[in-house]
Picture 1 (cartoon, helix red, strand yellow):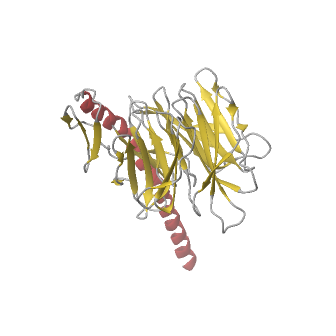
Picture 2 (tube, helix red, strand yellow; picture 1 turned 45 degrees about the horizontal axis):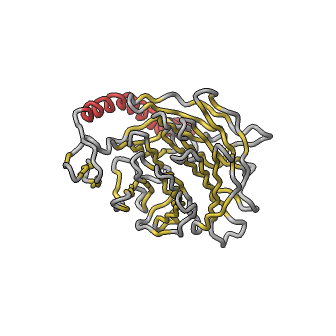
Picture 3 (cartoon, one colour; picture 1 turned 90 degrees about the vertical axis):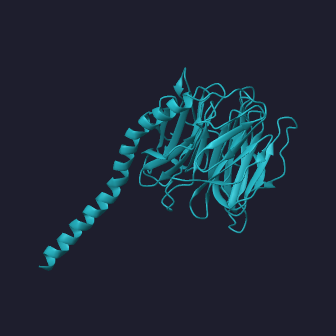
Length: 374
């Protein structure tokens, strides 16, 4: 009798575990089927709205819509934060990264549990998502990706992917329409014996490519440090330059502005900190403290020159803050509809060439949830 009960309990437990794992996948499949229909309905609404060009525009967020006001007119646009939908993702504890290409595509990269890098892309006007395709892993010896990934779209339409390998080097792979994907190439590691901990990348409007790496010192009492490396077509890769400290456990992110400036952000369970590089002076500003309490921010620069930052609050919700040259920084606003349990990654953001914003979070059970504005 006891043997029968034991076997029954084992089978019941196994069935419950399988159901728990399959439910998110079933939900993702249903969401992917619905997303195309939702997208077409939203685009139809947007086509009915026309706005004249305005030189003085500010954006104010209401509960569900962004209202654009200008000195010439005030028009409530069909530009909203749309409902959260989901697509599939590799099962792992890595946080993916996303970027918009100059040619209009949206790209996501992620690292699977075995260290392989995977890529998926979307064409925004149609809402189409490709299947996941493997980009392999760094190919020397037993190297594999352990930190990252990071992704950046260049002005010429190229796409660049970066990871930190188990050899502590930063590895780079890039794509162009004429050549496809290159092999993985090492661009070295920050100086010293500190352990690389995170990586972020962006493409500047002037054509340069920037990589930010945080490192954890051997001495656990010291703060995390930030290192910067950049590339240009005329000079190739620069050496590593220090950007200072990022608190005890800060994870930095980077975004380029259309005016050529570069902004680096981090948050260490406290205010958001910002430091920017001026194209005019060629110098970095001091660190500037912004309000809010978030962790692991992600940033993107929009085509109109605005900056957008998202982060996870102490309540695990997703929060958004943006900057405009005439208006300065907005307040933090919560983006509703995302799951808020701790099995969800920090949010990550991407901007497309037409001004669309995409915000994502990843469930470690195998789904990426996202919404978009525009």
